[in-house]
Every structure is written in C-alpha cells, then in structure tokens.
Amino acid sequence: MNWHYLFLKWSAVVQLALGLQDAAMNRFEQILRNDPDDAYALSSRAHILAAESKWDAALADYERLTATGQASASVWFNKGFVLEQMGRLEQALECFQKACDLDPQLDRAWYGLGLVLIQLRRSDEAIVALRHNTELQPMSPHGWYQLARVHMDRSEAEQAEKIMRHLQSFEPKVAAQLERETGIKLS
Image (cartoon, rainbow, N blue to C red; front, side, top):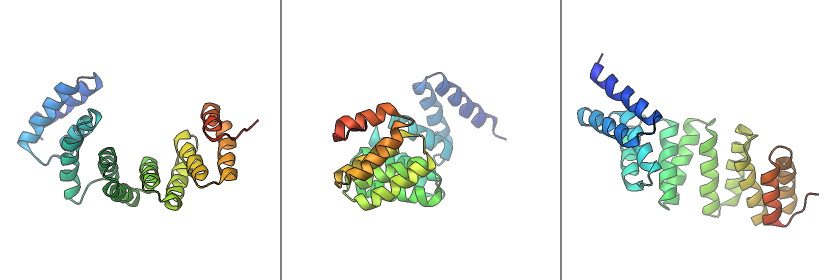
C-alpha cells in the first residue's frame, strides 16, 4: 500500500471539506506529478477547475479521463457540462448521450441532454430526455420546468398547463413563476 498516496488523497479530501480548494489542488498536483493518469486526482482537479470556470483546463483533464475508455458516466456528464458552458453544444450532446448510455439512471445526464437539445432546437428529442429526467427525479422542479417551457415553445399550452398543475402540488413557487412567464393562469 502506498501510504504517501493515501496521505495526499485523504488530506485533499479534508481540505475540500474545509473549503480549502487551493490546498487541495496542491495535493492533487502532487499526486499527478507521481502518476499523471491518476483518475481520482484528474477528476478532482477538473471538478475544482470547472467550479472556478476554468473551462479549458477542466476540459483538458476530462479529455484525459475519457480517452482511457474506462471513464464513468459521471465523468462523461461532467465533460458534457464543461463543453456546454463553452458553447460547444454538439460535443456536449455526445458526452451527455454517452453518460446516459453508460448509466440510464443518471438523472442529471438526462437533464443536461435535454438542455442541450433545447439549445439545438431539437424539441422532440428534448421532450424525451426531460421525461426521462422527471421519471428519475419526480420531485425535482428543474426537469418539469424545462419540459413546460418546451411545450410552450411548441405552442402546446395544454401540455404546459398539465405540468404546471403537477408542479403546483409540490413546488408552488415554480408553478407561479411559470404562470408569470407563460400567461397561463391556474386558479
């Protein structure tokens, strides 16, 4: 067992828990000097870089991780998120789809896929992705909100109203926001 590696890894975890991102980043850099392909350190460093909106640097780490052919669905999701932030929608779409293929239960991948499809004006596919998201996370308002917006964009007010009524039962503030945005009154 490599005690030095374990020390670096766990001290980085503690530093992250304490909000000491710079110190944790230093630990990940130390790990990567010893093993440039360490998946944990690459993924952790990429996550910190993305949180700091350092998209190019985060993408470089995610590229290394996905190049191995053994990246998890979460890594593909994170890469897709970074690409979406960079405006590289077609590449983000591929990453979100790969994440969904690897783990069909990864609700955030379906949500990301839906958002990118909306931006690409592929509403039929966006509806399918957002429905998967809402099936996996029925009490989260985000997928429902986007689904209602897509239906409104398609002039399908009845569908949007059904979703709004559903939201009203557990997220009345989101339903009220949609009322203001769409002009549909639920009273």
